[in-house]
Amino acid sequence: MLRVSNLSKRYGDDLILSEMSFVVSRGERIGLVGPNGSGKTTLLRIIAGLEPADQGSVSLNPPDSTVGYLAQALIFADEETVDDWLAGATAQHSRAWSDMQRCAEAMAVTTNSAALETLTQAYAEAEARFESAGGYALEAHLAAVLDGLDLAEVPRDLPVARLSGGQKTRLGLAKLLIRRPQLLLLDEPTNHLDIDALAWLENWLGSYEGAVLIVSHDRTFLDAVTTRTLALDPTTHMLRDVAGNYSTYLDTLAREVEQQWQAYQDQQDEIARLQESARHLRGQAKFRRGGKADTPDKFAKAFFANRSAATVGRAKDIERRIERLLTEDRVDKPGQQWGLKLDFSPDARGARQVLTLENVSMAFGDRVLFEDVSLTLTHGERIILVGPNGAGKTTLLRLITGQMEPKAGQIRVGAGVKLGYLAQEQEVLAAESTPYGTIQTVADEMSQTEIRSFLHAFLFSGDEVFVKNGNLSFGERARLMLARLIAQGCNFLVLDEPINHLDIPGRERFEQALTNFSGTVLAVVHDRTFIRRIATGVWELREGKVRERFNIERDGD
Image (cartoon, rainbow, N blue to C red):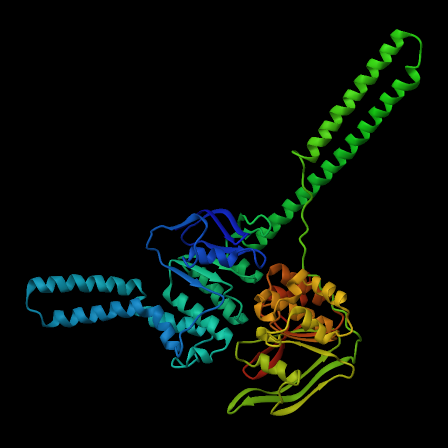
């Protein structure tokens, strides 16, 4: 139903997409993957008709196929309410219903047979549009979507401006799912979904009859939903098409890299062998031109001269073979991409009992978030805090970090514990500061050279260290916040959704860093792959209580 042909795109001198071609059929669920900056969002925007390509074409079959696009940053009108926004998803349904009602009322009073026939035909056409837009099941479908995305309790007359960033993202997703377009383009739909909502969306997409093209950094979600993977290469700017989900793509990639390493090593061994042969032959030729040819016998001189020339010729043949192997027949060494280099090195261990909560309760007015929570966190534990959106996870972290006071109970942080907090929504970065200034503020003992070298480890190079924080991308801000935390030398990390805007390679490196971290971690994360790999335990906050869960196993256990 979708055909992309020879698509290319530049921004100024920067090539983003190069000669991309692929076809998407009805019912396919495709994962679009690649590092941040590789052009995933650009490709979706071109397909959605929001941005022109420099070359190539995008076509739909049939041409009037409906397309729904979920952007990372949604734009809402001033004073727009939740109901106003959702009305856009049901407008076609509402118009068809109104036309049906109008025709039915006219049919009830007409006595003219010709007019009645015309009205009957108009009613049938309106009814067909009504059924196509969801029919009598639409209200139930709308309610199911809002409930699945944890929006059922949000007042429909509430201005969208008063919603949290996560609620706005889920509201945008809800509108698309209610519309049920024939082609869904989803740009990071999982960023603000809790584990319950993720499971619901996986199930919804599994039964969806249309085609879906998904950009997501949630590996478990991609594996559960997709059956094909399109991978954007940030170096060649070309597209790789692999049958299978994300794990299948990784397996394919690993096999190819292994094969390329073997081919590269075999060629290097062959070049070394040929070089040794050429050196040996030239040595023989030199020997024959020297001692053995040093005779007054002209026939002997001619014999050794011919032998020497033949040997040199063989050496030259070998050297030409070497030249071909180094140029036109060269096997390139598999690339090793420059990546995020993380090393958490706390200054000191601190107390064994890192955190203690005793009968902690929290409420906002009459709304009780949680009560009588008693927990203990010991040195070296890596605990993931999960639960539905709105359950109070961020509030609990803010109580622990001292930004808020509980309504009841006590919170104690152990002696010698240095706490570092990574907030959700990147709220602690000063927009007018720069990466350089951000690190200088928390590590004034570092020299300018040391700060620049430190930031270089987080992929900030050259003048990028002096770009204002407000102009950084989501991923760049996430990296800078990690750098800031590490520069403080903390031994207790409190992280509120730290990987939301990290691409998959960034998440994997962050996982590795936390696994190697000798301190203590308490983090809110919804990425199930991340949880399985790094968590030593899971706390679930639900219905005002916190309980320990033991059913999420780490990879390799």
